[in-house]
Image 1 (cartoon, rainbow, N blue to C red):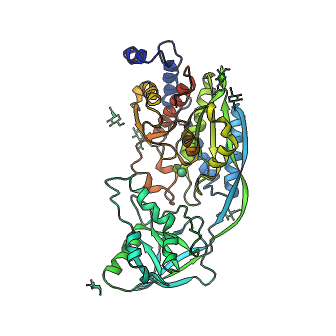
Image 2: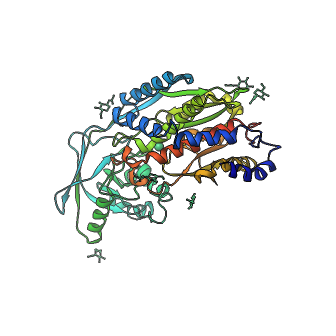
Image 3: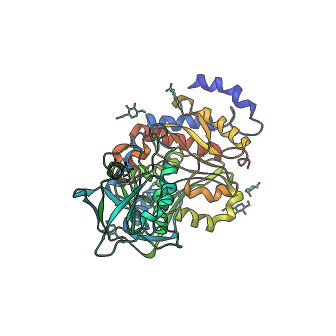
Length: 462
Ligand SMILES: *[C@@H]1O[C@H](CO)[C@@H](O)[C@H](O)[C@H]1NC(C)=O
Ligand SMILES: *[C@@H]1O[C@H](CO)[C@@H](O)[C@H](O)[C@H]1NC(C)=O
Ligand SMILES: *[C@@H]1O[C@H](CO)[C@@H](O)[C@H](O)[C@H]1NC(C)=O
Ligand SMILES: *[C@@H]1O[C@H](CO)[C@@H](O)[C@H](O)[C@H]1NC(C)=O
Ligand SMILES: *[C@@H]1O[C@H](CO)[C@@H](O)[C@H](O)[C@H]1NC(C)=O
Ligand SMILES: *[C@@H]1O[C@H](CO)[C@@H](O)[C@H](O)[C@H]1NC(C)=O
Ligand SMILES: [Zn+2]
C-alpha cells in the first residue's frame, strides 16, 4: 500500500493546487481503509447479504405495488437503526400498471405455448383475447414497406443485432421495438404487437420492460417474446407457412398511487450546503427478484453511507444517498425529485447512479467538462490496488439525467457487465447472478469516488 502511495505523489501533486487529493489529504488513507473494510474487514459480504435479504424477503418491487413500499420501509428502518443522518422519504406520484393473467399460444402451424411477458403500460386484450394471423418484420422500415399486410394481424418485431459483438450496444437499437412497436403496428391496422426480447442471451426467457403509446393511434396490446420464439416465427414466415396466434392479457393501468424516494445522508463537515449524490433505484420489474436491476445499485449506494459512517469520518460536503422509486416506467421518482430540488443545482457537485450492474468494477463512467474528468482521473489512482482505475466518458442514469441536462457532472459505475442483458427484466434477475466479492469491490469503488469528490477543496468544475 505504502509503495503505490509514494509512487502516486508526483502524479497527484501536479493537480494539487486545484484539488485536495495530495499527501495532506485524508482521501488516500481513507480509500485504503474503505478497500480494507470490504475485502478483509467487518464489511466483507455486508452489501451482498443485505441485498439478498431484501430481495429474498420482499421479492420484486413493481411500481405501484405494495412490495415497493415494503422495500422502502425495510431499508429505511435499517438506515435509521444504523444511525445515518437525515433518513426520510419524499412522496412520488407513481403509475400503477398491473399485469394480471396473460398467455400466448401458437395455433398454426402447430399448437404450442409461446414464452411471453406483457410490457409495462400495455393495455389488455379484453376477456376474449385476440386470435389473428401473423406478420413478422425485422425493422420499422420493413413494416412501413409491408404496412398493408399488417392490417388485422398480430405484428411480430424481430430486430437483429450482433449481441455477441456488442452485448451492451445492441440494447438501444433493439429496445426501440419494445418501446414503440405497438403504435407503429397500430398505425398499419394491426391488432397486437409482439417484440423479440432485448436480451443478449436466452434460455427461452422473455424479457419485459416499459412500452409507450403514441396517442395518435389506437392502443393495442404489447408483449415480448423469447428470442427463440421470435426466431421460430420468423422462420415460419420465411418458409411461407401461415401462422396464427392467440394472445390473452389482463393488463391494465389503475389510478396513480403514492410512492417514495428514500433519502439518507452523511452530513458534510465544513460545506454541508454542498452535496455529492449517489443513487440506484429500488423498484424493479415484477419477475425475478430485481437483484441486478437495480437492487445492486441501490445496495452499493446505501453502503457508501454505511462505510463512511462506520469509519466515523465526514467529508467536507454532504454525501446523500437517494434510492429512487419507479425508474422502470421512465425515471418517475428521479424526475419528481429533480422538480422538487432543482434549486439545488448550484449545490450539487456530482450526481451518480449505478444502474448497469454491480459486476467486477473497472472504474467510473463520467460525463462532465474535461477539467472535471481530469480531477476524477486523479482520484481513480486511489483504486490502483483493486485495479478499478479506468475513467471513460459517458455514463449517467435515467434518474439523474435532469441534473446532468442542467450542467451537473454525472457518473455511473464502470463494471464488467457484458452479461447484464442476459438477465435484465427477466425471471433470471436474481441474487444468484451477482458475486459477493465483486459487489463488495463495487461498493468500495462507489464509496471512494463519492467520498473523494465530496472532500475536494472545491465543487467539481462545470
Ligand atoms: C402486487 O403484486 C402481487 C403479486 O403479483 C399481486 O398479487 C398484488 O395484487 C399486487 N398489488 C397491487 C396493489 O398491484
Ligand atoms: C415464399 O413466397 C414468396 C412469394 O410468393 C416466394 O417468392 C418465395 O420463393 C417463397 N419462399 C419459399 C421458401 O417457398
Ligand atoms: C445551497 O447553497 C445555498 C448557498 O450556500 C444555501 O443557501 C442553500 O441552503 C443550499 N441548499 C442546500 C439544500 O443545502
Ligand atoms: C456553501 O457555503 C460556503 C460558505 O459557507 C460558500 O463559500 C459556498 O459558495 C456555498 N456553496 C454554494 C453552492 O452555494
Ligand atoms: C485490470 O482491469 C482491466 C479492465 O479494466 C483489465 O483489462 C486488466 O486485465 C486488469 N488487470 C489485472 C492485472 O487484472
Ligand atoms: C467472484 O469474484 C471474485 C473476484 O472477482 C473471483 O475471484 C471469484 O472466483 C468469483 N466467484 C465466483 C463464484 O464466481
Ligand atoms: Zn434499472
